[in-house]
View 1 (cartoon, rainbow, N blue to C red):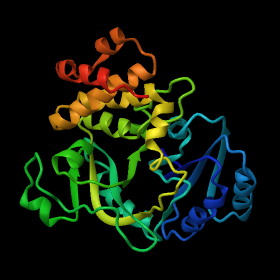
View 2 (cartoon, rainbow, N blue to C red; view 1 turned 30 degrees about the vertical axis):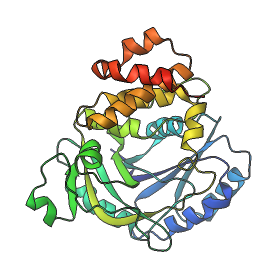
View 3 (cartoon, rainbow, N blue to C red; view 1 turned 120 degrees about the vertical axis):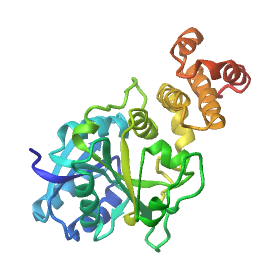
Length: 305
């Protein structure tokens, strides 16, 4: 049995200057059955000293683990194993939660707790000025939208159905059952520190796990100049095998429209070759061998440089 309802999981790297904002938002939570698990991914600033200060205040349950720098995806793998909460909520070190984030999220977690085929719940992100990063309003896409779905304040769907079938874009705040997350580890490649998180969400979609997507802002995001979101392309070049692995998985999911699958397949070969994976191995391991007939020649023409 889990010790806490939520594990608020924060991977961090040299973000001591932002951690206090997140800490303050956690102290304000009306729902208190949570732990804050911090995985320090090799910080060289005063993160450890700052977290020790937080711990000494004894305002919330905090655990701090220091490790060598291997990237957020490896930190998530470790966090899943160390978590003592039933529900695992990834909150980045430069972000915050709204004051009612956990009490709102608990309501939806309770709704799906005993429903089979559900991996978690997902809320909206906004910024400190009140702007919502996209909305959960249903748009016409590739799958049937029922009148019942349009009336409710949530949507039940896999990540792929939500993103591609309903064509809803924008970052979200995902909360996943810890016991399920433990079964879906990110692959880790030597000296690579970036893996797109869609690898996890697409793996769950491939196995038909649904989420309950609800229309409440629970997460405050400010995109920093040194953040992963802004530097994704450069990070991908430094972690080509990881990027290729994520793109290969996406290319093989038939619910994703053909145009996007072709794009993913092209990049699978581009980044795979850049990562010095042999062409023979890339062709053999492709999740979309039929699409490869079109994708591979394009990848040869537009190699990553």
